Amino acid sequence: MPSTTPKTRSTPGSDDTNAPRPVERIVLTGFMGSGKSTVGRSLAQRLGWRFIDLDSLIEQRDGRTVSRIFAESGEAAFRTMETEALISSLQEPHLVVALGGGALETAANRHALAAASQTCTVLLTASFDTLYDRCRQQIVAAAESPLPVRPLLGDRDAAAARLARRDANYRQTANLVLDTSAQKPEESLNALLGLLRSIL
Ligand code: S3P
Image 1 (cartoon, rainbow, N blue to C red):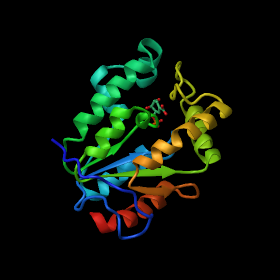
Image 2: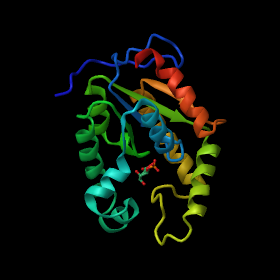
Image 3: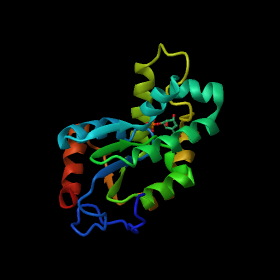
């Protein structure tokens, strides 16, 4: 069972993070478009650790895409699958996990992360305009898909309101925060490695 060692947030870039050392799992959180999957995959490669994209794990287990799960079974069913996927992932050592952007809306997920031993949760942020534009570019790239790639993105105002609602949960859960607004993925990876240096 994971220990319940309390974790507190640190100032980004400082060496005094209270994330337990050595860290064995790094969990990336943040809104849609924050780069969790792209940066997480590169981080895992760089560390020689396993990478799990929680949405992909859910899709593998269920046999449907996330958008089809939303369309056919609804958000509540997806959130249940998300919690099961997260809790089973947190058992593995040497792991980078990219959460879906809404995972921290579920209290059980926040509690599982707070209780997970040797686990550092990193919030990737960016300005709302940057996040929304990145998501829009991905929508254009996937234009042939009959279902929205991100069922909960919505229009600009809806997405902004969703981000504002989620912000406190993101920040309260994260041990570290990295602003990726002006960064390409490779730059975010290097900045993240710098932040993690003292706890790896
Ligand atoms: C969601 C974000 C998506 C995916 C699902 C719900 C959300 O993940 O989990 O569409 O509620 O913000 P990404 O953040 O990887 O797009």
